[in-house]
Length: 320
Ligand code: ATP
Image (cartoon, rainbow, N blue to C red; front, top):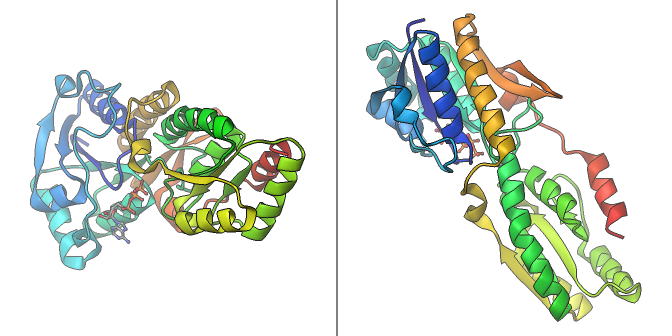
C-alpha cells in the first residue's frame, strides 16, 4: 500500500472535514501518499483527483460540510459508471480507498471493490445514524444538538402562546434523529416511521394533558413519519388548539461539529487508514461501547439497524 484515496459521498454531515484531516495526517504519518477525490463518486468517474498533504487539511477540524464536496451520483449505480470509477482508481495508482458517508455510499464502495479488487474502507458519517454495525455516526450528535438549540427556543414561544408545535427533523427513511431529539427535548410525542402512531390517540392524550395542567406541547417527527402539514391540520381539527409547524430541514446538516462528532471523526479516520495498512479488503470503522471496531462493509448496508424501543417507551413515560 503506497497511495490511498479519500472521498466524501451522499449527504454531508458535520465532522466529515475532521475525518478527512484524520485520514490524510494518519496516512502521511505511516508514509503513504494521499489523494482527495472531489464531489463524491461523480468526481471519481470524472477523474477529479488531486494530491493532498498535511497542510491541505489545515484549519478544517471545526468546519461543517466537506472541503472535498459531495454529490448524489446515479451513474455509479450502472455497470458503465462503476467500471469508469474503477479504471480511474487504477489509472491514478490508488491502492486503497476510504469512503466517508452513509449506507448508500458504502453500497457504492462495495460495488467498486467488486469491480476493481482495490480495498475499500468506510467511515460512517451521516446525521441519520442509520448505518448498521456502529452505535453512532459522525455528525449525528451535532445534528441532535443543533435541533435542541432551536427547539428550546420554540418551547419558549409555545409556552407563552399555549401552542402545540410540530417540529419536523430530517430522516428520509429512518427515525433515529427524531427519537434522539425528541427524547433529549422531552417532547410530548415522537413520530418515527418505524413505530405506528395514531393521530386520534395523540389528540386524546393532548386533551388529557391540558386537563392535567399542560399548557403547550412539542411533537418531534421524522420527515419520513408522514406529511407534517396534514398532521398539523388534523391535530388542529380534532383538538381546536393552536398548532404550528416548524421544519428544521437542512439547517441540521450544517454548523461546527460537536466535540463528540470531532472525536469520533479523528478516531474513525485513523482506524480506517490502519485497516487498509493491515490488509483489510472491504471493512468499515464503527463504535461499540467505548471501543472503535472494524465491521464488514456489506453488513453496514445489508442489515437494518433497529430503533431503540426501550428509549421510545421511556420518552413516553417521562413526557406524561
Ligand atoms: P445520507 O443518508 O447521509 O445521505 P448516504 O451515503 O446513505 O448518506 P445516499 O444518497 O443514499 O447517501 O448514497 C450516496 C451515494 O452512494 C449515491 O449518490 C450513489 O452515488 C451511491 N449509491 C447509493 N446507492 C447505491 C447503489 N445501490 N449502488 C451503487 N452506488 C450507490
